[in-house]
Length: 145
Image 1 (cartoon, rainbow, N blue to C red):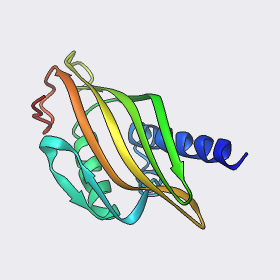
Image 2 (image 1 turned 90 degrees about the horizontal axis):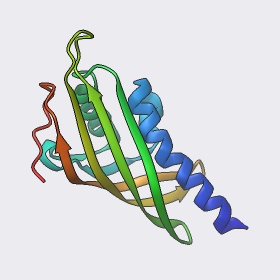
Image 3 (image 1 turned 180 degrees about the vertical axis):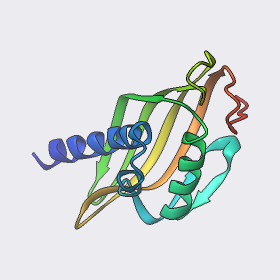
């Protein structure tokens, strides 16, 4: 039963990440990561520490208009208080100006290492593997696939 609950909790955490970005809820985004987490966002760089991760995500998302991060095909492997997860991401970003019709869409996969603490699961290490990037809205993501 614990394994089932771990899978549910980790899946909810992965979805919380996408919702926090789309809702621009930076406190909720911070709760997804441990204090000294590491995230590799590809062409945006590698970031160390919860604060740096939230700052770079916030700077990027706030350079966009509305966004939608769809998280799916979640695969989780739990080993005690550690876990590995992979999930697909399809992230659509509209241009910042409402009348600007441009859209940028990213298809990729997040690969995560997670740890369990007294407050629940959190991401220790995340890497984004971009499979395809289409469109340009003038945001700072200039990824290569």
